[in-house]
Structure formats: C-alpha cells, structure tokens
Image 1 (cartoon, rainbow, N blue to C red):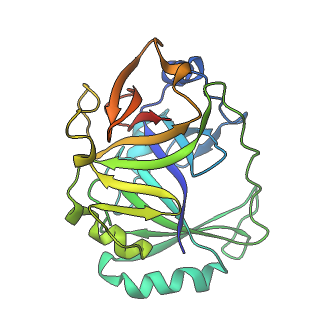
Image 2 (tube, helix red, strand yellow; image 1 turned 60 degrees about the vertical axis):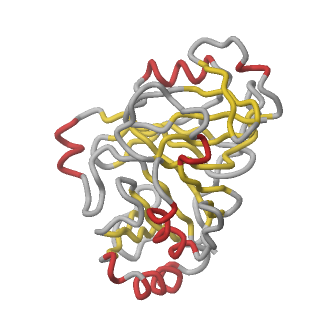
Length: 259
C-alpha cells in the first residue's frame, strides 16, 4: 500500500517562506540542499505528508539536473512503498513498464556507492499525472528518522487533500499506481483525498494563474480563527464548508485550509 511522503513545489524564496511563518506555520529547523541547486525547506504535520518548499538557487544547475519525465519546476508527489526496496519497487517496474520506469539511489548521509543504505527512487519517464512528477520511494532499514511534527500556532493538523485542475480521466493512471478506486472523481491515497478541480468549481480558487495543474493542497485545522483577517488570506467556501485560501506563487500549489 502506497502512502504520500512529501509534496513539493518550487518558487518558495525566503520572502514566501517568511509569509507562511507569519501565518503560524512552523518549519523544520534544518533546510537541506538537493541536486540541481535546490534549497528545500519542510513543513511537517501530525497527519499526512510533509510539504517541501523549494527554492532554486542556480537556474543552470537546475536545468542540468532535470531528470527524464520531469517538467522543469513542476510540483511533485513522493509515494512511499513499504518493504525491502528491491522487492517493493520491482512489482511497480513490471506493472508500469509502459511508463518507462527507472531507478535512482541516493545514500543516506555521506556514504557512497550503490550498496550503501539510502533512498531508492522509482521514477517514470512518462508521468503518471500530467505536468506533475510522481515517483515511488523505498527505504533501506534503518530508514532516516522523521522529525517530530510541531504544533503549528495556526492549528493546522495535516494534509487531507490535493486539488488538481484535471478531469477524473487524467487521474486514472495515478489510481492504478496507488491501487485505489476512483469514485466520483476522487481517489484516496493513505488518507489524502485526490480530486479534480470540479470540487471547487462553484467557488474558483486562486486569482493568480497557475503554471501546473496541481492547484491546491488541502489542510485540516482545528479552526479557521488564525486565518480570519490575516494578510494574504482569502475567505471562501469549499465543498459547502468555510475555508481559507493562502495563495503562494504561479509555480506552486496554494494552501486551502478547512476546519
């Protein structure tokens, strides 16, 4: 059973990150640098995947890094597979050979070599979701410890949904990958509801145009009190319920908070 580990997006410079902190989000104490000169900052939650906020520090280094199947600067979703990496990933390689899967291995820490313990990534040269980089990750044991999630001052509990500007048919391949039914245009991945944008058609989302179809990450909060009257937040309704929309940047998903 696949679960969501991380959801990432680009365009989060220091000012954007500071704006999220001002809204009561607590970021992981340490940022990390990934291939392609990508500075990665994280927001962890009590439930659901972490958010990975990426700032590209060197555009040429990033362009040289972009792997097969990744549209430059597109958002991405890491799906975590349980079990021993070779066994866990082999079944997906066989079943989804038409997507041209290929593996990458990144050792933990400063160790090197293909046999060093680390992350094992199964990427796809043909994306499972249009303009979204979706890959499967398996971990050598003992895996890296996940940071203790903080209590966010704004009462956010975790990620409960993803909202795409896509049709249900566009999500059919992802449904097969995660082996979940697509019911009324919605599929559930480890407690996260993945849905097409029709769920919010009555009340359009961000006024800024989006480069990619992953329009919003839906967050659950204990209440919306921290977002009422806050700078950069728009009150709206989502699926008949009060919600608060935090717009980010054209490359990234917005944050849609529900209580």
